[in-house]
Length: 526
Image (cartoon, rainbow, N blue to C red; front, side, top):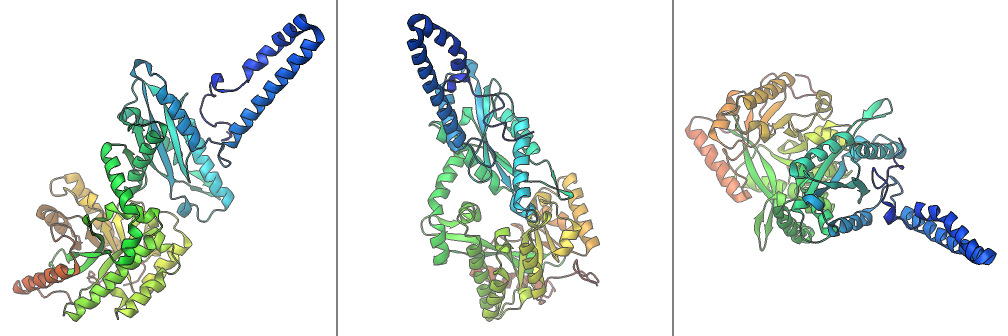
């Protein structure tokens, strides 16, 4: 099947929208014969000239339409979608029929296709487009937006509510992510999807309708690959706030207004502090302290991920040094490191420089890598950077474990020493048997692999008790403590250690994380 054959729709454009075309062709015999009867050869020549001019106009119109197509996929572009939506909204809808707009973004192509050449990467994109087109119904239209984004305009129907639109979106996603054979193996893309049903659309014409679906796609992207989100008025409010904040992010980083807070991590069995996690907080002069959800999208969109990492790393190393001067030696602090940061060839030198500047040993810093980053065929630069950080002495942790598909081979290759079990497996484990079984399976696997475990998002004493009883090594969450600024975090740690001593438990003094006796981290030998 050729992707270029299927352009705007599974059905050709209505003839009423084409200048000339078949209607003109069908008129040629009658016009020419009528001209000859009425005026002889002179009239016949005049009629031929008129028809020739009309044919030229037709050809010009078709050429203009072709120039509006995307050169890579043969699909119409954004302006075509807006114009079609304008016409659609201006037309009456008999029987209360409604449609929807789906914005689909192909994700993770750079990582998954990093070992392929340009032709193969283009082939992956075209393969996904072809698969998507095969799922469309008569009357549905697809256009290409910016980058790897596409808009699908679903034809109006009687039952096009939220549930139907989501069902269509899932079918489209399943088609787009079908593996494509490449170089003796298979490659695939991930997708995120935003939906705006016509019944929910904001006021305005086609541009506002399309933009609503794009905002929903933004929210889907924030939740990770394969997410689907439906437009709502609350999204519009949050998007406006984020847009207002977006212009201030770079200035806030330069001014030091975005800095780390610290959430404690404790040993499940003894309660000893084994470390902290550094979490970004924006101290906004007007809106107070903002959580990452309010600004990370802007950071990503503006390409400031590396700058944010540098700010958190610098603040974390400074805090470790200041705590040590105050008489408290924190075992370690973990920092989230995104794929963008790991693609930076200077990231290792940045870490080494900060450690040297503050006279810290490498094991005092943990590098948290999302499981989704190592689940596929990671970029060579990412692999090299993680391996070098591990050799330097930093502790490599796999964050949000259970949300991706990291293989044992990938865990070994990256030298993972600890997995952080995603809170989705921890939530309600004290009241849900299925949750407990899933959690037990993960912990059993980790014991077999000699990898330390930490449960994230422990929010109740019940969850804390269950996770500890199942053999999880370390805990983190509101049940232990919330994230705090450096000063309050230091006071909390000192008070916690004092309570441990009163209970006859000596606080941890090792700089590296607690490890089960006789077990070596994955990739080493005991």
